[in-house]
Length: 586
Image 1 (cartoon, rainbow, N blue to C red):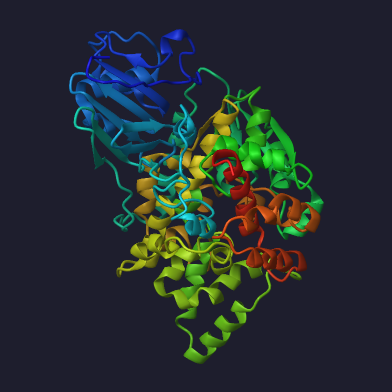
Image 2: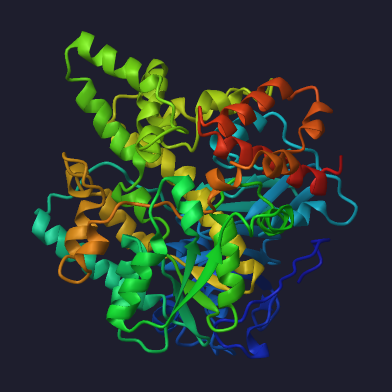
């Protein structure tokens, strides 16, 4: 390892390719001058080995060794050749440098802290709590956590600890203790593709088929997350004749579904499985399973303080699936690149409202602002429309607020001080580019990274590798080059091009169904005041001067009475309390 570095790199391996000891890490080249610790998969590693490493005697059948040798010979220039999801640290004793690299979309997490004491890095935040370290809480961005339900951009809940940005490599000079940042890939959101719609439909289907096929590479069993929604069903379509693939689905109770005001994903998955003869396993999730121990377990493994109820079914599915599927393919990311979120529909509606006469527009905005989304029929639609009214005063920043979960202003009301969360929103929308392009950039750098992080963490918690075909960078680049109307029709048909690509391949009840979010039934869970108060522990917040406990109590009262749906901010408070008691200790 050389004589210039006083440090340590380590690795715990999940064996997916070449499960023999030949794939163990840290891995070194034969003369010991360079080493790598690596997480993820490079799916075209065999082609790269044949093209660039014909004269190198490889000792394993792993992509790790191929990446090691490529970086040893070509340095960061080789990153452009890699197709896959990865995060790695490369130590070069020849130059006394360490390189930290993260994949293009941020599928695999990677964190670092650079100080006068040197560089600390790892794929989990837990590394910054080891060896007697007492990390300080990032209270400056705490309001942003409650607003977004995660720490935005490269921020983390620990002060001075950051995420390596997707598509970026860091170069650390050990003797000089300096850190340089370099970007090797950027998502281009400006429309540049003049392809006819029919040709684009065919191309998207081909790219997705290739991405799914590429992600089957493994020396262990492969399965899928099958929700019964469009994205996971599209993946299942390309695997429907592969008898070795098993599928895994979470199932909510009827009682929870009524309280949520949404539809059952599992019903669609069950029907599709019967028609195609898929081997599908169903796992019950509901209010009865959501106790503090389960929430604490997901927060421990997630450790990045993400208040997203989808972590829990992801954890439960992978825990049950691990015995039969060591790799799971997920439809994650399709909504961001193909405009499938409610926030995209809100933006479309906002554009239509702007075309109305001023008095009519003002009246409609005012009516929508006073909707009570926790009460009566049509809760799902009211949760959707109320944002149009409430965020009207935020100018172009309202587009970013459309994509957040829960009510922005109520989320801010629970904590005092810190930096304004809008500082993370305004830069995306302050210029004259098309609002959809701006929103896509905001979601790729924030919402998507959050979702990919929790998916990876919940998979790894149960020794399962999650793979995301829609995050193949070639498919992403193609999708982002398409006109908005190819992805979201003027009539509000979201993910239009994917639906047309799968027409005649997926049944109509999948293509035309109402979208239902993947997650725990938080509204149902928090409808029980006793359970909510026990999980929340308001007295804990009363011991900290920067929390407004009166506002927290008001949020509880509003939610239980059905005046507002405050489930997301209440879950963020519960998650914060449990996380802080574990890692900060008071």
